[in-house]
Image (cartoon, rainbow, N blue to C red; front, side, top):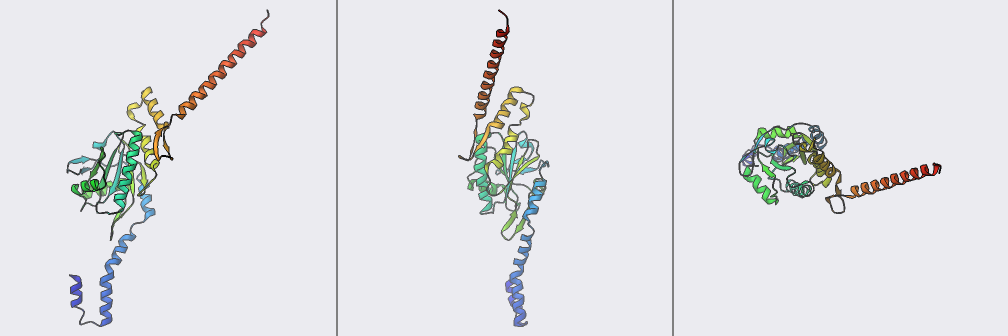
Length: 283
């Protein structure tokens, strides 16, 4: 009711003062919102985000869309993890980001394996991003991938996790200003890489995931398993023509052709040496 109260106090004042006060009442909130918007500096946000690479995230307790507790690190131990931060009342950027991420995740799992890594989307607007809201957001974006959870958290957990990830957000007149990033986390819970943008090139997400997936601790010290992972690492390549990843066996063809040529050359040289020696022997 501040407008009604203000109108009731206009009569004793001069017209000019009344107009000045009215203008202040109307535009002061806008000025305050503008000040809030100015707090977000894109360059500084990027700097903070990059400084988080190498940090270990905490094992925070969150809740899935059914309200069941989820431990961020413990429940995803042993697999790389992709973390995306959104707020559910966003009507444009966050839905678009999530839909594009879903397309990239589908392509990544097609190339790396359906159970090779996990994904979580976390709502950072603690006042509104309840488990029910997160579930509704997932359904609205058409995301039903296995191994992809939509999670809620307490204010304290969001603040601590945001600091771990280098994720910057500020309340504004529109809702929130925030950096658009997806964080790639190692099996041990360290921030390995950041992917930026509402949309992004597929290799920006898949290449770091590929490095983590095909560098499995389980294959360390095992020649065959290690060799298979190295082959997959080098031969799983991005095809710009199709916009997808594929297994490229041309390297094996080249290696076979090269090996065949070297073998033929060695045989030829050995035969020449033998024939030369025979020619020198007296009859």
